[in-house]
Length: 289
Ligand SMILES: *[C@@H]1O[C@H](CO)[C@@H](O)[C@H](O)[C@H]1NC(C)=O
Ligand SMILES: *[C@@H]1O[C@H](CO)[C@@H](O)[C@H](O)[C@H]1NC(C)=O
Ligand SMILES: *[C@@H]1O[C@H](CO)[C@@H](O)[C@H](O)[C@H]1NC(C)=O
Ligand SMILES: *[C@@H]1O[C@H](CO)[C@@H](O)[C@H](O)[C@H]1NC(C)=O
View 1 (tube, rainbow, N blue to C red):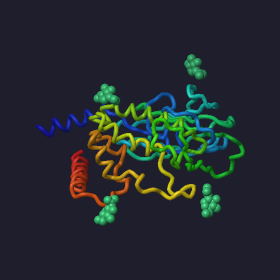
View 2: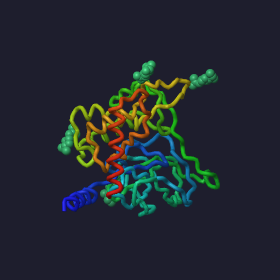
View 3: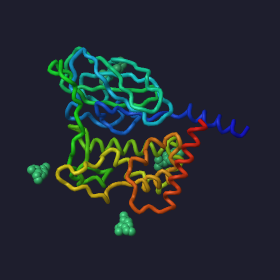
View 4: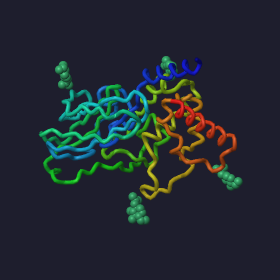
């Protein structure tokens, strides 16, 4: 009986919760999953993230970060770069059904444009946009998505201030101050969402802050001939502290996967034990549900 109640509560949580999803290729204005209409916050990049041949099918990549509330996505286009544009639907695709990265084929419009906006919108209300070009010059060429490029940040960041004076990887033509603002919006939205964090006290906010900034501005390893300062890297232990302080909900644990951060060399047995028990709990929950 008790397990039936727990199971029902969990199913209810799964039904109520929404996924975190974001456009990965071409690179999105805001690297964070975001529900801000109609482009997931952020500002157009100053350069096209990819150049496509008119009336030709291309693959875009949509990542569902959290395994709940997945749903069909609508891909739209606007031939300008206004943040408040209306989008013409190119395609609706219902393949995003679980956590993972989806390669979705979409036929570009016949009209050429120098800088225009590709928009992806999910039925669970996640939005992303990317600045692209449509040009006959791309016909017959293999598509090359603009890679992230290393950018030396001066003092343009007012939110992710710990990334000022650092070299970080951002989409080509992106304005770091715009990414900074979008990241601040996502930070506030995630903290205010009890489906993501069960606790959002000041300790949680302080520990979460470097993680969302690291996701928005990953450190460029060795770029511009700088040696990577290992002391700048966030660690699995710090990630575990943040997860525990914010009580990251079970369903959103994959939003900030601690396993992608390096282990601190001299980890204490206590931390190892608590990490092991976290893994144990996850494995058990996966087996049960
Ligand atoms: C978008 O479409 C709505 C409804 O058709 C219209 O009222 C609005 O002016 C349009 N916005 C832009 C920016 O074109
Ligand atoms: C903390 O979460 C609650 C909902 O659980 C929300 O109402 C409140 O605004 C959040 N506080 C901050 C600072 O985000
Ligand atoms: C990196 O170092 C190489 C050789 O030491 C030099 O030729 C190059 O200009 C340097 N690049 C930058 C961005 O400083
Ligand atoms: C780890 O331990 C070694 C030797 O016990 C020590 O030299 C080193 O400074 C420690 N590193 C950290 C990050 O604490």
